[in-house]
Length: 436
Image (cartoon, rainbow, N blue to C red):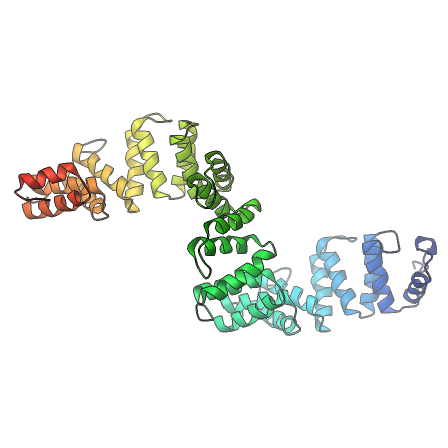
């Protein structure tokens, strides 16, 4: 049997420490727990996670709930003892059954994640509720999520908001963000943009980047607060500096266009790059545009970033990539590839791509000439207001190319194009005997 004797030289000479040691040695659970805490922190003794576990265990075996919880945490993290998730949950449960809220939270999240125990949302909600009722903010947050998603309980947005509010009132920043989203979107509470801003701001002041992003958006859109582009930029910059890709993209956009801040193309490019490297599709497209048309042109880099954005479904990037393949900008000319990407963008309703695809079919470029398909794509682009598509569609109706000739319909589309200042349409209307 190992000796229960302590080496008193490990401790400071303070009499309180000596009394603590004596009480722990004689089986006082509270003293054993405190001695474990001191070893864990190095407070009055030489720090030792192994000895901390030793005294936590003694206190835990003496049914000290907080010691049982910390012993479970040591097993969970492998701190001072070999990592053992099964032992972790065992000690958390012992502590939870004594009503210790942090342990109830850990048991609840273990069931929610399927950590050691089989995943069981009903059990998760049960234990989280016990901890939440004792005021543990993290348990209140997780219980709110259960009600929001219908995990282990009936979905109930009002109850979700109730528990989010309890956690938010304690300063829990994730819950504060959730309250802002609830008021912004009107789930569980009536929509109220001023209250949404109030909660977003509370979380943002704590440095929560997602809340900072929402505050920036509120200022930019004048949502629940007076519109202020400079404030929007500052809050988005705070979030961007913490690595939030959406914020980095927005900061890049404001710097590129001089909104809320002096225009700075180089800084814009730097922020776009940060977001693009995180896989932000719109930032990848914006960065590609800078490489394509900016002062530091690099067509190869433009194609690389267009391609990454196009693969993520950005229609404008797909059309730009199609144009690169068509022209041979930064990549070898490839009509099939151009057609492929124009088709992708067109299928998403991007008008410029639809016009170009119509021109391909109209002229037999890379595809068999097909005037009916040309008319189809001209129409899709024209109804979105693209002026040259309106003119081309009118030309088809005037000549009967790919469609039954109809001068009235031709005049209608010429007129739409003319209203946008298309000189060719104005001339065509005059030839039909109409004025613009």
